[in-house]
Image 1 (cartoon, helix red, strand yellow):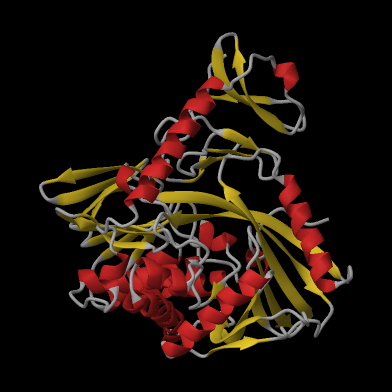
Image 2 (image 1 turned 45 degrees about the vertical axis):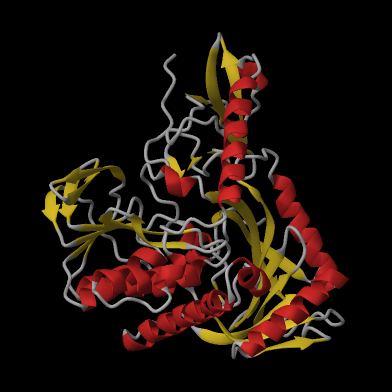
Length: 500
């Protein structure tokens, strides 16, 4: 029976336990979030002598970094041809080069700080699933080659056979938690301070500085980096330019040597992605895909089943064992490039990194390069291309806003009358109970938790996710646990309890 959590925790060393923020503190830079973005940013800042305090709501690596497949690839989710068409050749080339720089940054940190994180270079294969896909990949190879990247078109994919596609060399694999646990220890050894179990409740501007408030204390600094995957403040101009998507993953073991140690992506819609690593006790696979907009589906169990069916078809057998299953969340920007840098045009105090799409590990490391470089006066060469200040694809922004409004209105109209008897054990439903809208969860023993279904971010109505046992917001992607606590933002406050 597969366990319902990510695979990484069981193969990582025991992490350092850190105390909660208490009282008042001051720093030069506050970083909110101890995932890839936050820790890489902190590393470069403390190396340069900056006084840095990092706040993490749970523990190091417990956010979306925990839920990754840990691909390190310069071949971005967004096709080169489209980037060149929408922008220009310089930005298309810079997109791949910047993610290549991110891979090399992770390798450099691991070597410099002696962090054993299983880093190794590996090939990435993109499988064409149609004739149109083949033509797209031929064009990608042509462009990638012209920009100097080691890519080629192949008629056969190793381990899979007669499937044409693109082979991209010098991508990489690593263990995300081993890397982050080691990096966090080094950040502290270099003078940084990390507080865990210190969820941020509010941000306040005070005489040109930013005060960050948690339940048990406050920190004030000249600059703040919000590294929480989706900015956990009221940055509406950012949230309306991000599409939240849920993605599903299976992990387990397969016959040794069935695949080379590599990464695979296909051109289907929704697409699938596969990672195979060779271990001492056999080969390990991670398979993901079946993406959909967060909060728009309740019966999410079907996506795990669909992934298994896809894998059986790919293997041509059932010679595998599934040990783990989980889901993660990605955020895609409306113009498909990440938002990294200063948040506001007239305020140089706040930085963000978000919109990495399916490239969160390289996107996070890239954000660390860009944000720390800007703070230290060492600008990264391609930083302007990823700036949140850009105003591209206005029509796409308007279209997404229209969809958000539809979700807001639909959620408030479609709430049926009901009773607690309508909710089965292990199930959640949004119901109208005696004229009051309530998100009802009943655990396996029949105990009931009643919450307000109104997302504490901007007021949309959450939906039940039966696969993950969470309340998910379809507007901006906030997710809440069955007790109402925030699983992932941009919301900062829990769903309110409904009194009896």
